[in-house]
Amino acid sequence: MKFQAPKGVSEYFPPRSRAFEWVRESLIAPARLAGYQLLELPVFEDTELFTRGVGASTDVVSKEMYTFQDRGGRSITLRPEGTVGALRAVIEHGLDRKSLPVKIFYSGAFFRAERPQAGRYRQFYSVGIEAVGSDDPALDAEVIAIADNGFKSLGLKQYHLEITSLGDLASRAAHRIDLVKYIAGLKLDEATQARAEINPLRLFDDKREEIRAFMAKAPLLLDYLSQESQENFAAVQRYLTHMGIDFQINPRMVRGLDYYTGTTFEFVHDLLGAQSGIGGGGRYDGLMKEIGGQDITGIGFGLGVDRALLAVEAEGLLKGDEFTSDLFLIPLGEDAKSRALLLAAEVRKFGHSVEIAFGDRALKGAMKSADKSGAAYVVVLGDAEIASATVELKQMSTGSTSSVTLTSLPQALSLALAK
RNA sequence: GUGGGCGUAGCUCAGCUGGUAGAGCACUCGGUUGUGGUCCGAGAUGUCGCGGGUUCGAGCCCCGUCGCUCACCCCA
Image (cartoon, rainbow, N blue to C red; front, side, top):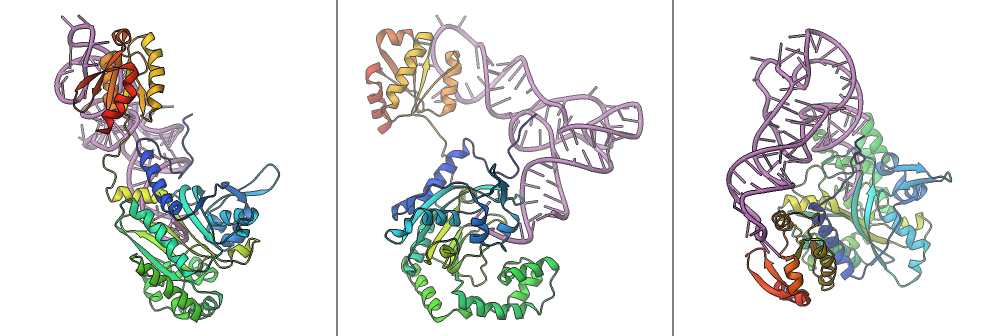
């Protein structure tokens, strides 16, 4: 029996796992610098949390959730997104009873039972932030800036930011009436018809030419925004411009989660395939209340770590980021091997990475491993070295060596590496 | 859930109109005694995704099945 990973999961192993780590940390760093703090969350929650929070009519909830019964007969679901679980924790632990806004970030795996494809996985990784308890449009702008900083810090260039406003409840209700009226004039197949009934905005996202052409003249939600929503959206744009963040307004942008209101945004990469969204988010006015909390608003985003890595690779930003050790120790003989274990520990105390040649291989073979490991320096430890308490510190790139006493090896390595 | 493409050594792939498998890279060992990268030599490695069928004979043909992949849908 040959085991395989479950269908559609993303896995990272050396050497690419190193790039994955780097991408994830880079996306989180700007949030830390802006005062967001870690919220470590469970990957599964009460199923009802998602059906209520994300919305039962969404595709995510209606057909993409990993749901199962636990041993107590409770219905459990692997989290398909991060916001709802984060807010649940905020409410449950009373984080919103302190000074507002609550600012938290999270990172981890999410699950959706979709058909996998390039950039779309059944288990994927996201980092996200949520700021709860303030409706200041400057906060909207800062949240967007944090996401943008993350992408920029990776060196990404070929992406763009799309924003829109979904307005408040009254704005959306007024628009929906006219949009439904307009759509009634189009003959739709059954599936599309059903989709339109659940959320007519979805048609804006249809990729079929005839539907796109038809929707090009459909009434836009942006034209129905209330005075307050308009002013709010204008302010967000002003702040973004002020910070030098490029964006384009996409009045046809559609998000798949029901809870979004007001400012909504998406980062789209130009070199990825069909799954080009590398991050997105928005404001959610009614969500806290919907899942049992105070009636306060919040805003957040989720950034796709898997997709950001694909984007980084597509832009060719990963050259020469291989893992290498500082020192490779080659013991010759049993006595040397025991000493090498201690010596390695000594050198590691100085913060240097040290590998040991295992397996009693011939020196030549061990040197080859040292070479392949990419180690900067090599030390051979044999009877002669032990007797004299002196080793040759060899720099692999040049082949040059220098004599170093065993006791001063850590310091000598520090000096050599600092050059 | 729907459609297209593909499944041969660890990786990338070749295998002509059917005659039971190969290359490159990687890997291991060696090229005189304890110093790598080049070069040379030797070696190990595959139920040719799986199951049926046609055939004297199938990696090559047919059917089924599983898997991977890309796209639709949807989204990170």
